[in-house]
Length: 231
Image (cartoon, rainbow, N blue to C red):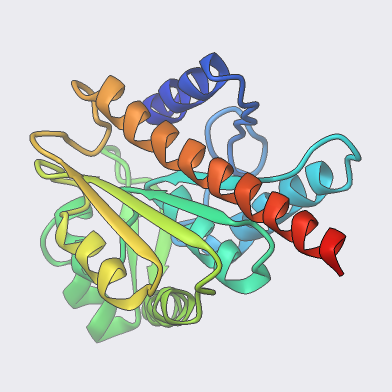
């Protein structure tokens, strides 16, 4: 499935002369591999491979990471851990995964997790698609809290969320806003999780944030060069 926000954002960046690389995590979309629920560390490895690839290129710098939904969580984790990308943009990323279980999969799943330590997610034919474990949920919460709290102040973080998001409520983004020091929150009124009717507004917010960051970076680099020339 194509991530609509990612397509719109990449297109808007390209129109401003900013290169963007889009990819699917392992087991998602057009990428090979099996899907795993809450496997953020595996997906973080995918993102780090991409960052390393472009960072090793002599003619490119990785100026920003942008992720939608689960991708937003992975971006926050990567930026906090490696601290080598100056901008991290989280679009509708979930903070409280445990609180979303019943809303996503139906009533009773969270109770099963607490009673049995896991629950099975099945398709409409009763076939088990994957498991969700209590251990996984707890580990994931610790990871996101730690990532938010340890984010470098040198990294500018933008979170964008739709006020009408029924998949991940905007309250999750408020949690990121509380924990991340150098953080800006932009709520798009009436937008759902995919920003289906708000693609242009989403792209504009993201592009403007990145362009402002690039301008700031350019000024800082020029100021640094000027200081060195005076020594």
